[in-house]
Image 1 (spheres, helix red, strand yellow):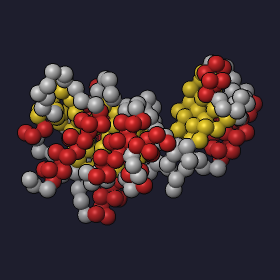
Image 2 (spheres, helix red, strand yellow; image 1 turned 90 degrees about the horizontal axis):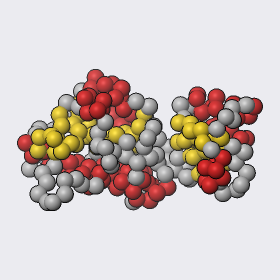
Image 3 (spheres, helix red, strand yellow; image 1 turned 45 degrees about the vertical axis):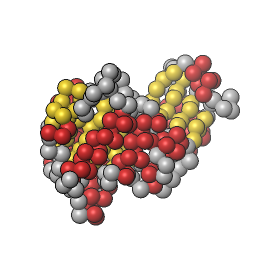
Image 4 (cartoon, one colour; image 1 turned 30 degrees about the vertical axis):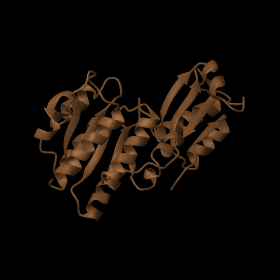
Length: 247
């Protein structure tokens, strides 16, 4: 099911969006405004575990297209999110060991869209992103994915570390990309695997890295020492593909 990307303004409109089941990625509320209808909106946001940010009026005025935001603006997702179980089910349906891509704080929608596109072409069974400090499924992401969002499910989770722990119980092991890791060609990247790609600037966070079973790196021969996050993800995904097909 697809949603059109939507900026929803006004207390009643936002409340109706929540109650109608729309996927709300983020909610902006005027600082100090927690009374009456706004409090009802906040209760709905809490039920859906929506990320809420309290901001100044100038910020809301800047975003608003109607000038009638009433201290509340919500951002709806362009596509509906899947559940993590949906990703595992996709692997079972194909009779393949799970191949998942976990993104630890990707903030650039172009990077996210490109990663989803490559994940689809590499045969990954889905992508997992965190709710906080990361871009969601915006229209830019959908456009950059070149249609891959119609085929590759994306799950959004509250806690990436906890999700990894649960997936380990399902037999997955995890490898994360880091410059200090063993070169990817020397590692066994077969079997049920979760590939973890970190934030564009800071890389994989400490807690997520600690949950990974292995750390891998891409050999670098140039004068700079890092790749764009989506390019690094693509290189590693296709090393997994190469090892899976045994060549």
